[in-house]
Amino acid sequence: LRPLPRPHLLSLSRCALMFATLMGFIASAAPELHHATFYSHAIRVRPTEVHNELGVPIKLPPELSRVFANRSVGVTSFEVDVVSKEAVHGKVVERSVPLHEAYNHHFLTYIGDEEGIWNLYNLTAGAQCDKPNRELLSMKTFKAHHRGFSQFGGASGAEFRNNPHDFPDPYVVVLNSPTHVAMLLHVINIPNDAHAMQGGAARGPSPFLECPCTAQRKIDTAAGTIDGCLPQPQFRCSSELVAQRNPACTLASYSGGLRCCEQGMFLSDTDKHDVEHGPRKTLFLKMSLTFREFVPGRDRPLHPTTCCDATSDFYPKGSNLFSANIEYDIPKCPKGTPPERCVHIATSVEPIDLPEGADPDELIELVHAAGHMHVGGMHMDLIDDLTGQLVCRATPTYGTSDKAGDEAGYLVGIQPCVWGPAPLQPPPRFKRSHPVRTVAYYNSTTPHTGVMSLWLMSAAVVPPASAIA
Image 1 (cartoon, rainbow, N blue to C red):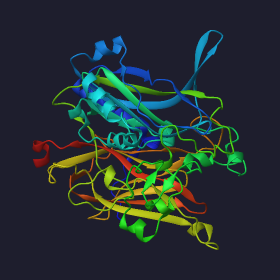
Image 2: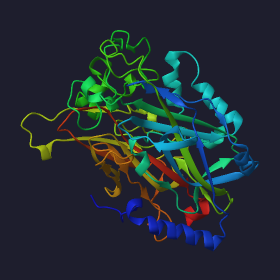
Image 3: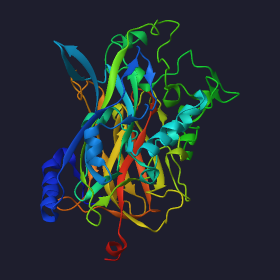
Image 4: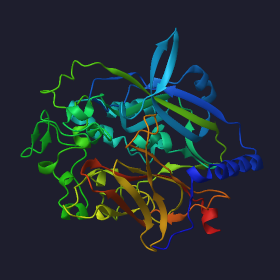
């Protein structure tokens, strides 16, 4: 590979990014920055129980509604946390909950106007068999801002505390007169005896984070259903994974992952463990925004790209999250393989940002690229498939302690690649139809189910005058 000039990683160049942003503000008199923090409804889960449901929309506090009223604002950064709240000596004490107590599989927050947020929420309501499909349809919304809301998060999960989303000036996520928020936290209650419940030694990450299909799941291969419902997403692996006979590609060989990790499911055998009457943990998804007034002509709106997923094949007419399997398994390497050669590789090629109806020749510039992997992930590359140049490399970090954000053995962070004004590298520009390759590397000394290898990227449309220049 011939690498592009290496984009700055936030862990190494936070000061440079802050300096560039500050200089941009000074040079163009950027509006004053504001901060806001809000919480989801209380989420109560029993031992090994899954919560995976979009919460009822929440009206923003009056003080925020006044700031947002009849104006567009630009979000310059956001952070999330999973917290508990306890009364101590008459005061509410907030605590960041570590992954070995509550595993964050992924989170989503939607902020927008009342109509847009409620329309989105209603997509997730209805019969039980419809809920997963409708929820997934809401997970990837390229033109979200045209539907009355903007999206934050997506597949981001365990890495959320060390996966910064700071956008260099003048790039922002635009909110138009927002009044409501709807939040989803896909979380698993990890009990203290999690390893013992699965018959293993008490070391390393909990086995429940990989969402094993228990004996209680009614898998009917003839009907193609799990618990009487068609699995969502549909099984749709890349030709590479099909050729490998990856177990996650068919219901007949499926043993764990997203499809066995839906709302209210238990990940332990309830015939052996009385978890249904166990104590509940009460959790909250906490989100903090930094924002300012949006200045048309100065600020550059960001949008999520449609690419990329390592389980996808190339789709010339457009690509999105639902043309792929989303997850796959990492089989254990053959006995006798040297540990350094126990590496599973998955690849895919997709247009970088080609939603249905978009002009394939329109230019975009890539500003922020965050990789998403699960435990076992080694690194993931984003490569220009026409030139062979490395665009971005995502390398996970693993925890070494019991502290929230540094949980031993868990994947706890993936630093994004960021481009922008100097001293950052300039954003790489591509036509929407430009093919890029994802190459994901996992350690296969131990098997894993339901892993993911996704790119969550933000881009801006290149103005025509700038494109000509």
